[in-house]
Amino acid sequence: MVQQDKTADIHAVIRRGKRWDYLFAAIGLICLAFGLLTVLVLVGKMGLEGLDRLSLDFFTSYPSRRAANAGILSAWVGSVLVMLVTAFAAVPLGVGAGVYLEEYAKKNWVTDIIEINITNLAAVPSIVYGLLALGIFVYQFGFGGSILSAGLTLALLILPIVIVATREAIRAIPGAMREGSMALGATKWQTVRYHILPYSMPGILTGIIIGLARAIGETAPIITIGALTFIAFLPPLPLVEGAGLFDWVMSPFTVMPIQMFNWTSRPEEAFQINAGAAGFVLVVMTLGMNALAIWLRYRLRKNIKW
Amino acid sequence: MNRFSKWTALAGVGLLSVNIAHAQIVKIDGSSTVYPITEAVAEEFQKAKKNAIKVTVGISGTGGGFKKFCRGETDISDASRPISKKEMEACKEAGIQYYEMPVAFDALTVVINPKNDFVKSMTPAELKKMWEPAATGKVMSWKDVNPAFPDVPLKLFAPGADSGTFDYFTEAINGKSKASRTDFTASEDDNVLVQGVSRDKGGLAYFGFAYYVENQKKLKAVPIFNGKEAVLPSPQTVENGTYAPLSRPIFIYVNAKSLEKPEVKAFVEYYMKHSPELVREVKYVPLPAKAYTLNMEHVAKKKIGTVYGGEEAIGVKIDELMAREAKY
Image 1 (cartoon, rainbow over the protein chains, first blue to last red):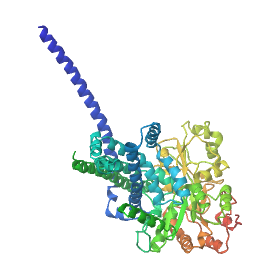
Image 2 (cartoon, one colour; image 1 turned 90 degrees about the vertical axis):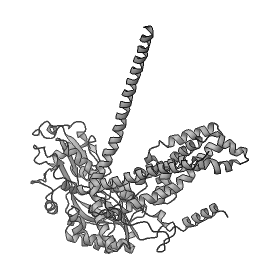
Image 3 (cartoon, each protein chain N blue to C red; image 1 turned 120 degrees about the horizontal axis):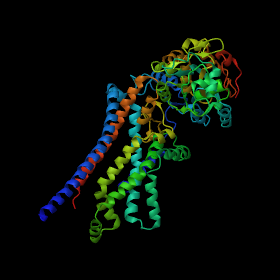
Image 4 (spheres, rainbow over the protein chains, first blue to last red; image 1 turned 135 degrees about the vertical axis):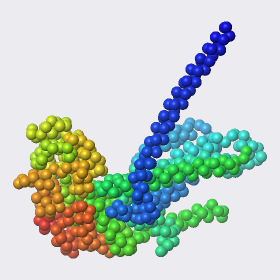
């Protein structure tokens, strides 16, 4: 009799616990659905709105005062080139800094301060980077409102993200790998070069691409340094028609978010459709980059054998 | 040399060979009000020149545009108001000489919600009562503007303080540029103003005519009493001068030194020649035809500077204005 009571008690406790389990799962699901639905509705609405305009012409036409002829050629080319400069500047700097902090730097209060500052930098509003870049790149260095200025500005913006991602990736490598390498007589640099970097590559690449995906949607700092609204030509191709190899970095430009913003502030209703289409393309670009990050991580992880 | 240092060397050489003044580019920046006109001209001009000359147009607002213009960063500045005294001095200090060219009329349009049936027209005095600095926190209901109006809360929307539209309206209505009440919803994006008024029965806003034309279903324009009669804004009433005092000329300012460059000269000539049709297409009101030829004559005669002397001129006819002596 006493025995039965006890089992019943236990069952009751389990039931109560399970009820909470279900409840929490349901709340979690609602939260997830809320976030997911918002994104879906937003992207869906833009896609539906802009569907009529999404044709090849839209990608190969320059902006125009006639909504039906206007396209995003200069905008998407500008975005891609700016991202290129950003990646070229942010990746070596960010990865280098991350490796140094994790592998070489002594653990003392100086590194602690640097660490805190890098984490804080990631939270600085992007417009602040824009102002900094306006003073340094645009005026001090005389780069003007060029692709170079924009690329470097966004590189500063994502530098903390790349550094933090690099450090997280390196930290995830078991200490035994390091010790094993050293035990076999490898120098510190050889260890970093042949073990640490390859093993942490999936994490680093993910960080880089997520940083770039953030940068591609940035508008404020790019406007600050003087990106243009109407531009109906492309930067000069390297080594064509007398252009130098790097002339394109000094070219004036526009980017996708600016083109989109310009269209939303037009009086004509038809431009809102263009804005929707451009927004949809931008979201697809961002999602594409994120997908690339996931794929790369998967591929590279498969190759790691330890 | 290993691979790495070869690449660094190559990149170094490449950067050194960057040629900044490579292509022929006409650089324009400034007012968002003038932007549609300049954009249309730029688009057609590049087509006509088969892209041999490149044109870039930015939107920094009239004030922001002049800042760049007076630093010599741009060839042409779009302006929805004449250059101010401060800007004249800045240009002078930098040694930038310029030609002032009116290119079109814009009618500042006062709009209300379509459900608002008690306002049939308004006088500048009523608008002043509504917008003057002293109205801040006091004139909160339509009844406060005119006792004949019902007690409906007044919701005001207007362009931000960086815009030439704001400068002109405050000058024309309140008598002093930038003097305005401060408790209204400001936005540089005119579509935000349109949304605001279309959702609120007691809403009122002012902005360029083009935004009203495109949103006639959501908004109602208010006829403005010009001293004799209440007049609605339209291309006709702007052209014949009866829509006053809220119609204004808008301008481009051309750097005189830039104008010596063949590409800038070609662009400005194209601008003046094709303005009448393009201005109409983007829903602005063209100036009388002779104003455009007069602009080019002023260049031939080297009439440098502004005819406004750093002040707005309210309700002056365009031909009188253009005949005035220019100051630098």
